[in-house]
Length: 164
Image (cartoon, rainbow, N blue to C red; front, top):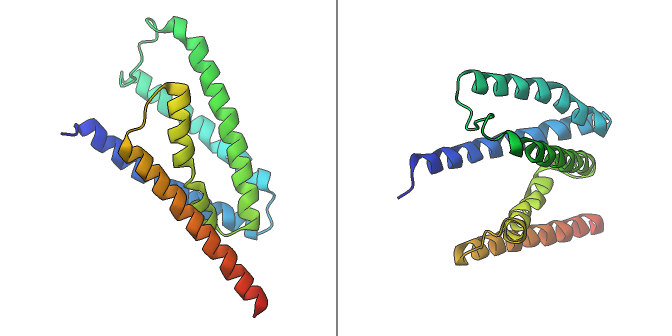
């Protein structure tokens, strides 16, 4: 039986997927209007940093934060370090995504980006020591196979259009 926390996690992940798909479309719209790829990356920082600071302040002020800062003070430097590494890797990924959207359709980029499920499964095994069960392996393999077939179909379709 799943607890309510898992339902919240699943609901939030679907909401995030909707948000990310909107971001792909908006970045593609910017790329079509000949805006430099750095523009959308910088704008995300301008709006994201203050918004995150406000949300953090509200959560800490209302006591809804899951952390006890006095008890976890010794872990704070490593938490900040991991957050900084995460931010740099995320920024690099966003830059590459923006450049990719300049050259290809948003739907094809979104389909290709679904391979991140496979990378997450492999990295969680090696870095976090979280083992994968049979269903995780089948799911990651299915996503990889589906992405591969869609890419092959798109390559064949593009070659067909060139011969017309």
